[in-house]
Image (cartoon, rainbow, N blue to C red):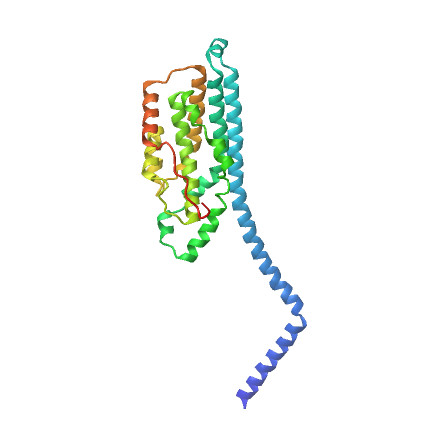
Length: 275
């Protein structure tokens, strides 16, 4: 009898609780909704902070680039009157065209940093569903590479009018940014990842910046975007020297030859499904 009384007592308590919950259902639902909304807001805020950090970094890069461009234009204006007489219009246009190309290429900074952080060997082994998610992710970073973009960064003609060191550093800089973007394009279109041999790019970086060998060996992936700021600074320095008519040292000339000999003259653009 005591067992039945206990069960009846528990049942009554449950009914009372259920009735109370029914009466206050709106309050409970609002409480649960608020808790879920709070968790969602926290996750959203975390994501917003992550993306804001990335875009702030890109904005700072553009500000640094703008400052460097102003410095470059100042260097042009500071060319002595004697040298200015011997600098042809074509030489000045070539230097300006290279720096304009650098400005345009920097729209690929986020693509380059993203490609650096992806393990493409592991991606090749993923299933269809997971690869599809990554392909959609990659598509966000490949919209910049349009025919108009290609026209803006095409300055092969300038090679005849700037010194070898300036061209070599520009070539290395552009190859890093383009290779990262092309790898994401290949991922998006599900074509083989044979766009660029990382060993070749690593060798070119070592040619240009031999003191960065410890940094290159520290990371499991190439992380070539880490060296863009330094390469851009070296390019700016060499463009100034080219305009001023200063001759490269034997060491600088050797570095320029090594970079150009290591890198291909151009990269094949990945064939997409729409091609």
